Length: 95
Image (tube, rainbow, N blue to C red):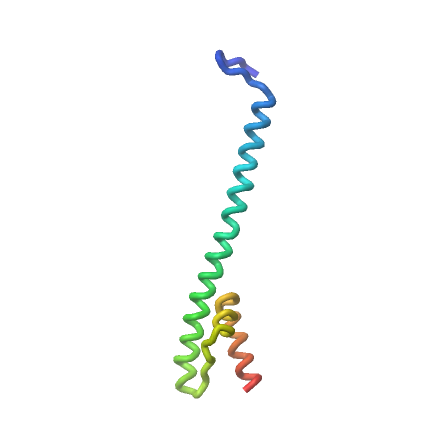
């Protein structure tokens, strides 16, 4: 390696630097993953709530409604649109 005046290229320093960059990457991934999960749950909750409202609004004209309670809100919130479809199918087959 070329020698730069005042700077010693030691392999231990290079390895420590690469290891530090790798650790920063891992810590960043560790913190980003839960934020993505929370944002996805919030997105699904909003879409699921809107879909429940639309189903109740449109279904009200046909005598069909899904009760909005903590259980249906959780199903619609965690699963989003597939959760609302599941609630509709559940309502159709049970009632």
